[in-house]
Image (cartoon, rainbow over all chains, first blue to last red; front, side, top):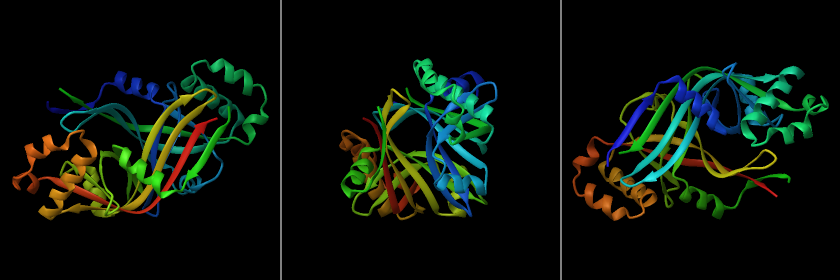
Length: 156
Length: 156
């Protein structure tokens, strides 16, 4: 068995991994002290951005307010095989993260999130949509992707 | 169904997650530009450190040489349930990462890695041990843990 590690360069596979993944681990930095968070996301294909719904406080907000520049990774774990081979496909994403303020974009973000994460998004949409109060207090983040690299390791 | 997110504070569960995990995603920083890598690890219980075997080049080495301060996360993915609940247990680890130079510690690191990752470590040990040449060119990193926090989210 050999380790085969190769770059993923085709846009189709990258888009597949973005649509298939459910959460991303994001690295941030403040005064060169790194911090890491993992968040469920919804991928907005047309905007090439990720949306997050998260708590309106905590370390990540302090980091984001200091610098919007982040680097995240989405991992598809394909199991640990013999001969020390951890099979995976992964993306490393660079981009800018920001807080979403406008109600209209918050509504859009929820739509993206529910379509991405839920088997039957209509159930949750019926439950939560139609009342703007649901969005006002909610913290929504958007990560605008500026660069993506992909990598695959498999056993052969 | 309610979301229940709680801190994991007991040492036993933290040690269990360290021993059970197979890879960690690590955030690093250089001039406040964050970078993220994911590596298979072996946990050294007695030293409270993680060992990694990796390529002797690339961006991560540049980052580590700039600053040893890292922040990593180990995630146990327990599935996505109804009502937008991603069940998980996770650790966030702060610490210092460094290159291991001494042959003796490299040998120890391989022992830790194989015991951690392999079902039958003796096969790989027989194959690779006993010849110090195998270690000289090999890049081994050690992450000395200084702080761990844990979090659990489950559906109820």
